[in-house]
Length: 121
Ligand code: HEM
Image 1 (spheres, helix red, strand yellow):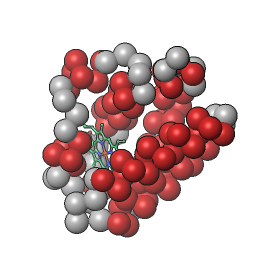
Image 2 (cartoon, protein in one colour):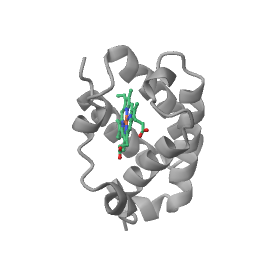
Image 3 (tube, helix red, strand yellow):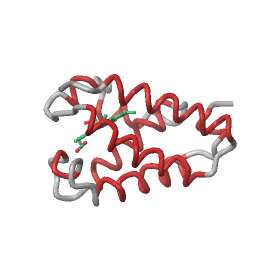
Image 4 (cartoon, protein in one colour):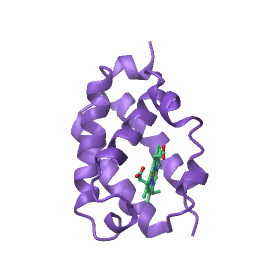
């Protein structure tokens, strides 16, 4: 069974990413990085990406093609402060899901690794 199915499918990812963007919306360091006035599109892209990554439907790829995350983050200055702020909101969002400990740890390990790999400044 995929991680996606094990955590209950799209609903878990909707909750995760929605909670995360509520944090970003209030964050004075991160909010200015997001080019769009409305965070709905960004929320949808991250949700579809994570769903695909964890074994759910491949809608992200159908719409956006190869993720190329390093390249797609190149326009934004992401130093350690931005990375840590991103991870702080994601930690809060992961905790809010109340997943079984092992699943929670698996998700968190990946997100930390991915965030570290996107630092570009
Ligand atoms: C897009 C910031 C880490 C996945 C974006 C955007 C910003 C951003 C400003 C553009 C928003 C938009 O789509 O309109 C950051 C910062 C990070 C970070 C400051 C801190 C390290 C991550 C991580 C992942 C991720 C760790 C994956 C696990 C994505 C995806 C998109 C995106 C999938 C949309 C790409 C597309 O299809 O255009 N990010 N990000 N980001 N980010 Fe991040």
